[in-house]
Image (cartoon, rainbow over all chains, first blue to last red):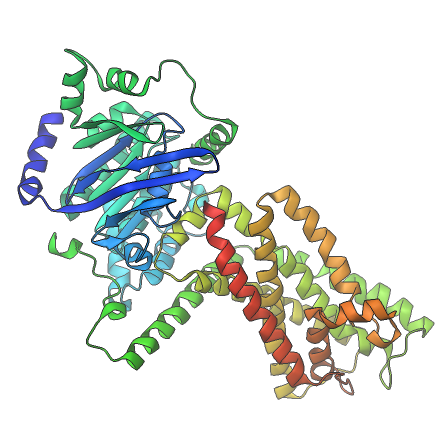
Length: 280
Length: 283
């Protein structure tokens, strides 16, 4: 799988156009520095993964890049726009699937997509076709008129990804796209994300704390620890840097000092569990 | 496929060839469509669940059929040339609109615990359009209350003002009233952030807002300090506007224009505050 990825990447890489670049991006919450002078760049067409234990700052990075949270200092360019100065332009150019459940359970799948098609000003003439394409792409066509609260967790995730891609964003942010999903649903979501990338050529930045997920999906991975990048590279580079026969899990432990289950405070655990419950 | 991937959206909002007037017109148009999209979203949710609307009918029924009938017998409250039932009916309409609107903010707390707020905030829709859209959707609930209160009023023999422009006036005031108090509710939700605290504060606010207004008795019979409170209470202006519009022979103390100005002013202030606080919900 990994070799196949390297080939996939070859073409966009020769073009090497940087589509996302953070510049000393920093966020403090009172005394805690959640993200500490982050400098990362992502190339067009790349699938980039931010991995790290809970509290490493992954979600904070995504919130800043999607302009939901203003940085304390530093900035970033997303699709050529400054997230601090031109947040509105950034918002037009990106798609975002939050970690928490974001599809509306009291609407049908079609309605969920319709509202977003309107909010992103997709012309009326194209709306229907785009929505049907998106549903079809995600394998949800036959459930279009079902209420989303009757969907399974994997279907909800696929719907959310469909929603975030409706307006063909330049950069797509996926925050823990498979958290709380069972292995089969996770595989299906992976397949759809991969197809999304190959069909639409979107640049994708995702966070995950599943190492196998990063290994499977990402061209490059940054391992975050305490708000900083502890290591960055392709999955195979990272594995090689730790030693022969190392898995990405070993890399993770090596760079994050994340030995035993220390992850998460009450709030994180409760929100992750809630997502898991609602999705599962 | 790839060429399509480069942001096709919003070409119109960043088109440099368009004049300044054309651009601000496009901005205003976008703002209006975004607002209506959010309102549509909430309306669609409501239409999937009608039971909510019906259970809402209970409270105004209690006030009009029990409280109103009893107080009307006592004849203790000076209501000018109209009967007490005629006097209180617009007050009960305003009150039932208030009671629905004031708990509207809990939806934001719910959405915050999920990722819905995050998703909206990362979309290009202006924050104030998100707020205004939510506020307008609360109006739909408010209007359904108006229908119920009109039916109840007919039942108890209130002298309704059937003049069509006046009834349209009622629609406008009810829309303003619901939008106003639901935005107020959003502000509270953005500040307290948890369901438990929000419910507590909601309960705490509704009754004082209701009693410190002209809804069920005229301001003139209140102690002075309460009169002062009533005069800054938007509910007072809502009821004051509703009285001549809804009831034959009803009179407004401040004049409908003053009432509308007061309501719109309060609405604008609340939307501005809410649009500033709303993004903090997702942080």
